[in-house]
Structures are given as C-alpha cells and as structure tokens.
Image (cartoon, rainbow, N blue to C red; front, top):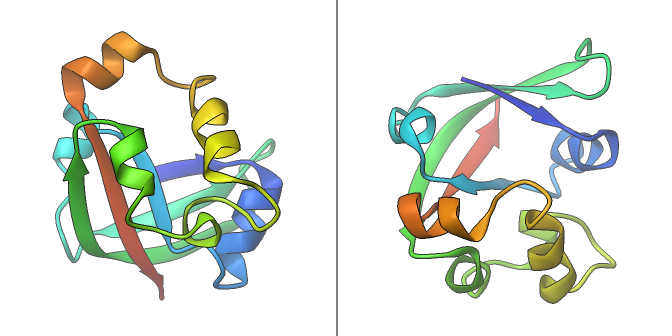
Length: 111
C-alpha cells in the first residue's frame, strides 16, 4: 500500500511525531490488514519514502468521532486544533463518501 503525504506531514512521520493516518474506509483501505507494509511517499515528487508496518486499524462512522481518540500530533501536526484538522479533511473527502464508507484510523510504526 502506498500513501502520498504532503511534505510537512511526511516530515512528522519521519520524525516519529505522527503515527496515525486517517482515510475514508473505501474499497482500497478495506484491503489493509494489521501487519501490512505501508510506503509513505513525500509529495510533490514522490522520491523520498518511509516504510511502516500497520499496527492497528480502528473504524469509525466519521472523522469527528475518530479524532476524539487521538492527539492532534498523532493525526496531523502540532499547532493545529482538531477542528482545523476536520476542516482540512473536507478538501479530500465529501460528506457522501464519509457517509457511504465510514472512516479508518491506521496506526503504524516506522520500520
């Protein structure tokens, strides 16, 4: 599984700050299992990468429920609020997608 991350978020993963990736639980994400390898690629050029192993998968109805169980540092980046993070997620996922698929928190460990 390959996951693309913006540069600042990639750096948080690289430095061990961020250890949870959140996505809608669509068909692609439903294939992920504990123990699977994830390769994070740094946008925009996708040259730098980090390998990680999935440690846990937690499923939620929506992102609002999901963020209650994690710190903002685990999910995104220091200096942001959970409300700002939820707002940013709207760039990537529509309410219809969230209602249809639900969401998943992918806890990982860098290898």
